[in-house]
Image (tube, rainbow, N blue to C red; front, top):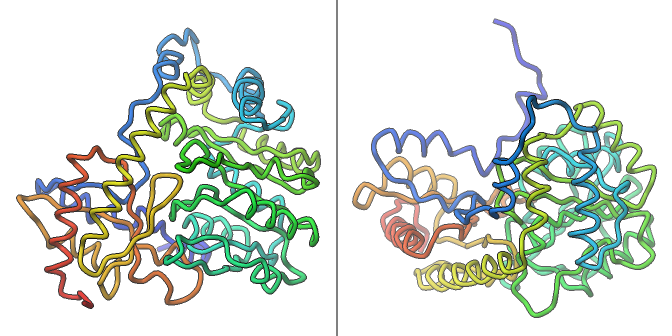
Length: 400
């Protein structure tokens, strides 16, 4: 039998999806699985996005421009970013196959094989995969669950920088933590990047989900760093269009965008129907975002309160996105999550969470942490968290 490559064999599995076979097996047995493991909101997509697809009169689906449809790039520039006070020309936007392709592009553009990117851990697990595929080393700076995973002292970044460091990668608001970085923290990170001439890759796909009075501060607005910032964005979360698979990569740096265009041409074009939906979504009224934000605050408050009532569980209050990291009284959250799917039932129902160890780079970190997404309506979430609490009581590997 032919043998697969070493790279294919060694590529890390998705922490978010690696337990899906266990969930599928449970469902085949007639078990209802409450999904707190994945950022798949149940909130309705904007009507204008859905209508744009319904009203499409194309007689065949042909390639778009490799950079994406002009009307989408122009619409993002004029209707979206300008409204936020972010000045971007359409020529500085390339539409990608979701935010994931944007992150991969940014890493490839910023680094040669063997180079390093500084990240704050815990971080989005797929960053690990993209780094592995490109021969890049992620240098992790630890954050603390007890202070809500806030940005540590800038001295930690200075200590992490080596001659092979090429970029700092941040997700703001954060996945998996829900941490919202302040304007002061972003300016400080920008100063580090400027002083060492590093790229600052800023993943801002959760920008609309900020739960403080202080507005989100984009890396694109850091003074004097215009040529160093690479912005990653997506329509998946903002408009609840996860399946459209449309994102973008943005930079004022012409060399970055010229390189990104080569990658864009290599894969021909982004999904056309997804781009049509994204273009329609640009007409989403402010009332939609306000209602979604209010709903997530209600869900967040309910989840955080319920989790912290469970003996041995601790989670901070996230100020962005729709995730939280919880510390559980278990020996290993991956074993616990698998046990819940295979063995634990209440009224033939169970709950699925994401083990958080794969969101960490430092060995041994996060083994008793789990990421939970507050994407279910309150009645469903209440049942899911009750099952989780009872499962923690019964789990053989409970540590408290």
